[in-house]
Image (cartoon, rainbow, N blue to C red; front, side, top):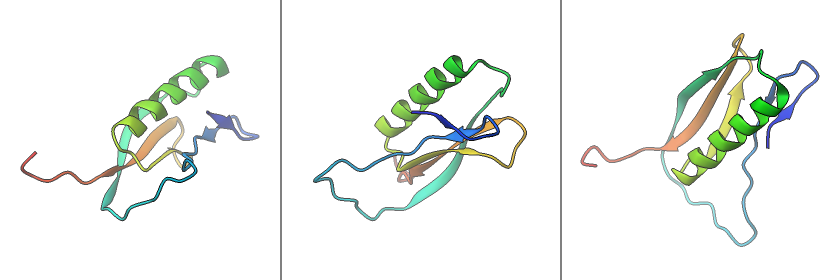
Length: 85
């Protein structure tokens, strides 16, 4: 779930389920989307929650908001895919 900080910016955190093992794999930080910071908090929450869920389903090991940009930049660590895929 989207958690804003005192400046209205925030990030999502992925958690590991009990019993799940983390496996070592190559992951690449990838820019996903830019979202306007002018949207209502309820819209931001729904949008970021849906993005996180989708990216997690696609194998993202980490999803975050890049706070070094003026708008919300959604980033994710996605597993490397073989060139033959």
